[in-house]
Amino acid sequence: MAHLQPLYARLANRPALLAKLQAQWGLRSVAGQGKELMATSSLLELFEMLHAEGEPHVGAWLALQSDLSTGHGIAYYLRSCATLEAALLEIVRLRSRLLPDGEFGMHKDGQQLRLVMRPRYQARRLGRQLRYEAGVAWLTCLLSHCMARPLKPQNVELMTPETAQAGQLAALFGVMPHFGRDEFAVCYPLEALGMPLPGSNPALLAALRPSLDYLLPPIRHGVSTTERLRQWLHGLADPSRASQTSAARAFNCGTSSLRRRLASEGNSFSALLQADRRARVLQSLAYSEEGIDAIARRLGYADRTTLERAFLGWFACRPVQLRSELAAAWPNLAQRRAALESIDTTLPCDDAAAWLAAAATIEPRPQANVHGPRLAALLLCAAGAPAASIRRMRMHLVPEPS
Image (cartoon, rainbow, N blue to C red; front, top):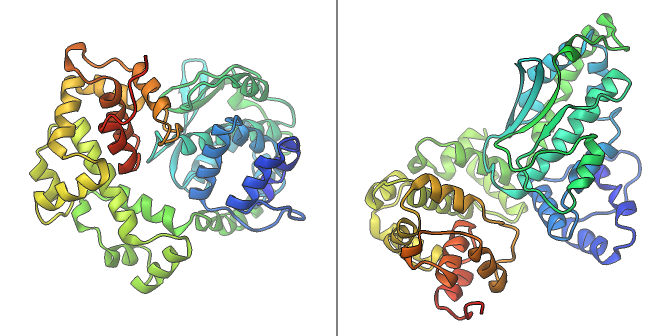
């Protein structure tokens, strides 16, 4: 909670928004650094809400307000390295603990040093992208801290969509970022690798390493059970084998313990399993030619009928109908993926006018006759909207814009 304290100053002139943060996410004033961690799932929702409220880059701003002397002494440890390259190699070594849901790499590209971060799953979710945007800001701040002077990047690439407030990031990074890229990256001159660090101390580095390796695991434990289970389900090569028993075994606990942990976070194994199946079914129908019977078997359904019944509840239509509409709109799978992944998932699901306006910006095949409410319904499906919103759009309860 301590890292969110600067929001009180930033949003001082927006008391209603602050009250919303306090009511929905438990934001409150804390003394000192505090030890309470916000679950990753809640943090993603928080970033998404602030994005919708006109604060799209607040995560990056918060990252630059953080006290680098905290965080298990990571900055102090890295400053003890001999060169910037040695410090970066330590970050690479610790990447699974610093970034448990993603990847971090260091690449030499010609005369440029390229530091890359990429989420391993839910990479298109806005909240996760905003969290990684904040990670890029933290990394640039950390490297400047190690050098004891500003280290301006040559280039910054972000997966996040461009906003009207892009200038805020340009001020934070010292360079205008490029948006909508396939990964997060910050680039420096290759010669920066050899720069000596002013705090270099080999003896201190050797003394701190065991302590840091011991202290870092709690960062991983800060991830909620709900988030960890989502990760586990997403990573299963054979989703038909997913069960509460196998999940508990993977988490080294009993099924009752897993059930209690999820319940304390307002969730359940069955709800998360259904959400995972929903996403997998939609992805298979939208981006592959796999048969519906095969999809049902692969995901662990008893038969095709059981899958179709669940699908109807999720998307207010049958699988064959959704697939035929998608195929009619975009016969080419690559074009279909590009169109569906361009959707602004921050739009309120019940704002029919906003979804109709979004549909008007998408270009399906002209002869497909999938436009207006029909196209908006497809976009709502792809965005994971509730069945009620999809059904209202499919029934043409909202007139086409004149």
